[in-house]
Image (cartoon, rainbow, N blue to C red):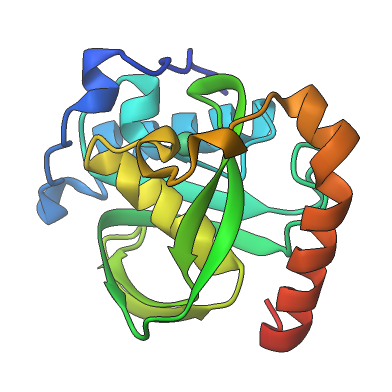
Length: 191
Ligand code: ZN
């Protein structure tokens, strides 16, 4: 198990688009080691996902998983998902105002518009290409992680800077309303 340091906003590796992974290398020891480190680091830090460039690996892969997450108690579950060379396409114009945080952006949250219906393509950890349609709240997590690989962090997408707040202020003043909105959304979409 290797829990790696998480780079912080402003680090050049986070702000630079990552390189595609050669699909022929996915099942090799180097890429498999990256995947293990990503999972270990995500779980250690209670992240809902983590992208490779957040731990200093400048290649296009991320992992996502939500079980019962104390950092995000309102998030619906996402089974462990490894995505290499992700491509996201929007399936509709419908969006949701998501309140986001990030392991690379200490003690800050803010509102970001995310699409509710996406198609995600990429390779899984066995090097097998896959295509999935993801609808509802969970779609936001995948958009956040894919953004990282383009050098985009959630503060870059916050439309109204007045929505920035600390985690403490969020818990005290905003989480109850937001969690209710998420529950309504999850009730509508089932995820
Ligand atoms: Zn992030």
